[in-house]
Every structure is written in structure tokens, then in C-alpha cells.
Image 1: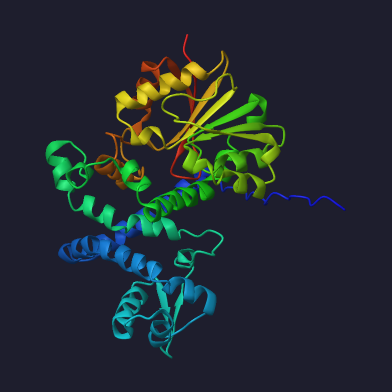
Image 2: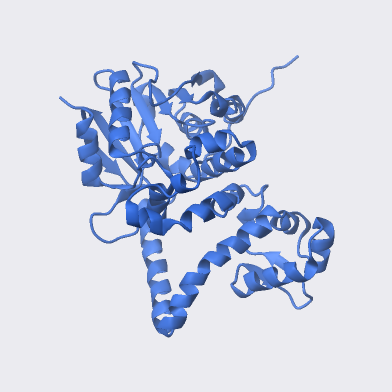
Length: 372
């Protein structure tokens, strides 16, 4: 009887960060040119109504239309409605609107098809963003964004005007909502992980402790790229329950320990490298400082801490501006921070910022060490 071999998936190479930033600048300038060529009232109206595009994409994703078009090929509204038990005339109007926006293809025979941009709406697409689209258009997010004025006026979370519990408790009590949110985070990590995995020589640090690493998508990618490295995945019990499957898929189970823990209260000590992705941006400066102090205590002399976060440019430039507003609306006083703000925050916890590594993703890798 032969032992079945586990083969890790091929980790794609990430495009150069500079090339991606250049392409994004060109895209923004083209969009700005198109807006400036339109009469200002109509350009403004188009911008304001763009939120409805998101809602329409969320609806066809939620109802299974995107999955059916992906698996069955082009279909007309009547055929789609019949298979999915929908109201055909209403469905047609939504599909027609998306097609006129260039997000679907409407053929002369009345059939609709997905485009390159909308194919990732399907759950089986290798780069599926289905959960992310559902997350952004979920009622709980729509409701808090409708109360943005409250946060601007008071400086407090809009979430608190709608719910007695915080967002994490809300999600924990609602399995479907938790699954969509967690699935969205997995999708974002999956797309950015190859760039982060190749940003450093992780094997030279020994064991990598991924703080709040979910099911291990990022850590598994790093271990697959760096065959000599070992890892420790730390997150809440409910979250890490899915980690064995992910680690097995990447063929790194024998090099990764799984620890269920509250990452804000304590993490395994004595590892050479600690990694945290998108935890601090959901925390106020006070809570973030406390978390950093906790993680610093776990670090040995010579150990490193890497934060994967958005670094807001000091002047101009794009930085996932509306993710920053999402943090303002739903988090514990969280925000996206500038390099100087990150430097000050790290120093307040006894850490020093060593360097910031740009990646093709909207996030950077901030490398820090124990100060003094």
C-alpha cells in the first residue's frame, strides 16, 4: 500500500509593485478625464448612483444568477428566472442595466453572459470574490453607511446606533453572516498572499507566528514558498477549526502548529517572527498599543514583527480610502494610519519601525523590532 502524496498548489508570482501602482495611476487619470468631460451635474449624479451598481451585483450574486451564468453559459432572463424561481421581467431589467454599464454582455439573441470583470462573482471561480461582494452589499453594512453622518457629527461608531453588541459578537451569533464575512477575508488574503510570501526571506527567521491568521491561507502560502520555514497559526477556536484543511491543501501541515487563543490577550512566546494582517486597523490607538505590547512580550531578543496594513500617504495618493471609513463606522475606533502614525504607535509599545515594504496589493508590510 503506497502513501498518498500531498502536492501543494503552485503559488503564482506577483507583479512588481511599481508596475501595479503605475497602472492604477493611469486608471485614475482616465476615470478623472471621463468625469471632467461630462457636464458636472451628470458626472456627480453618475458618481452618487454608482452605489446602486454594487447593489445590483450583490443581488445577482446572492440569487445565484452569476453562478448559473458561469456554469451554464449565456442565458436569457426568462431561462435564468425559470431555473432560479425569479420574476423574469424584473431580472431582465437588472441584467440590462448591468450590461449597459459594461458588466455583462447582452447578445442580439437576448442572452446574457459574464465579462472578465464579473466572472469572479461565481463561487467556483479560482479568484472568486463572491463573499466579498456579498459582504460589501450586506444589509448590516448598508445600514451603517446610511448613518455615516452620525459618525461625522459625533466621532463615534455608527454601528453602535443600530446594535447593542459589537460587530464580532453580532457575527458570532449569526452563522451565515459570520461565514460571509470570514469568506470575504479569505478571498482578500488569497489574492494578496503570494506578494506577501515573497516579500521577505521568512526561512531565515525560523518559526513564523501568524497572529489572527484565520484558517491559515497566508501562513500556508508563506510555508509553501519557503520550504525550510515553520509556522504557528493563532486565532479564535471557531476560526482555526478550518485550518487543518487549508494547511493540508498546501502540503504544510507537518510544519505548522495550530493554537486556539485570544490574540489580544496572549500569543505563543519565543518565536522568531510574528505576523499580523489587518488586525490593528480595526482597533483604536489605545487598544492597538495594548495588543502590540502583548505581542512584544512574546518576542525574543532579535525577533521581528511584521504588520500587514494600509499605509496612508502623508499627502495625496490612493490608500483604500473607503475602507478607512468602514473602520470608522463599525470598528473599535480603528483607522488606516500614515507611516508617521504607525511609527508613533509602535514606539508607544516599545517597538521600532525598521522599514516599509510596498507590495502589488493595496497593503504594505511594516517590519518592526523591539526597541532599545
